[in-house]
Length: 339
Image (cartoon, rainbow, N blue to C red):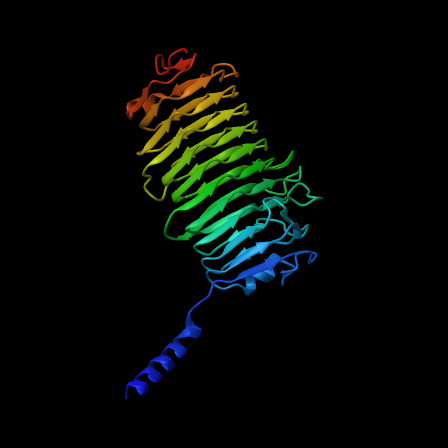
C-alpha cells in the first residue's frame, strides 16, 4: 500500500511538472555572429517568448519596429548600446519604434536611432510605454537630424498597476533640426512613475514634459541645450494630482525656462535643483501652490524682463512657499537671495 501511494505521488508530480513555466533566454543576432542565436530579428524572438523569458540581442543593427505584448518579458542588449534598433523608412506617422504594451517589461541597454533618410513630417516615439510596471533604463536614443522622432520616451494610455521607472537613458536631438518641436521625455497622465538620472541634450523642443501627474518623482536628471524649456509640468484635467517632486536636476543652456510649473493644485515640490544660463526664467511657478526650496538658479532670464526666480500673483495667492533659494534676480523680490 505504501509503494502504491508513492507511485500515485510520483504520477501526480509528473502531471504537474509540464505546467511549471521555466524562464528561457532567447538570443538574437542580425548576422548570426553569436553562436547561441536562434533568431535574426528582435520581433521574432519577442513573438516566440513566454512570460519571464529574456530576449538578448547581440551587437548589430536591427532595422525593425518592435512591439511587446507578453507580460514580464526582459529585453536586454548583450553589450550596452551595441544592439542598435533603427527606425525603418516606412515606419512613419505616430507608430513607435518600440512599443512596450505589457506589464512587467524590462527594456535595457539598447541604442535607438531615427531613420537614416528621415524627412520632415515623420513622427512618433522612439519608445512608447503603455503598461506598468515597466522599466526602461540604460538606453541611448538619438534622432537622425530631421524629425524621425517627435518623442524620445513617451508614456501614455497606460494600464496596469505598479511603478514605472525611466532611468539612466541618454536622449539626444529629439525633433531633429526641422519640422515639429519634440519632447525628449513625455509623460501624459503618469501615475506612480520615477524618472531619474537621465541625460537629455539638444533637440528642438521641451526636454521633459510631465502633464497631469500623480505620484511622480523627477530626480537627478541632466538637461542641456534644448530648444525650449528644460522641465514643464502642468495639470489640465483628469486625475487629481498628488506628489509631483522635481529634485536634484541640473538644467543648463536651454532656449526656454529651466523649470516651469503651472496649474498644479496640490503636491508640488521643487527642491535642490541647479538652473544655469537658461534663456527664460530659471524657475517659473504659475497658478500653483507648493514648496520651492534650496534651488540654485543663476544666469537665467537672458531674455529681457525674465528672472532667476519667478512666481505669478496667482501662485502667491494660492500659497507657494519659497525658501533658501539662491538667485540674483527675482520677481517678486526676496524669493531668492544672491549667492
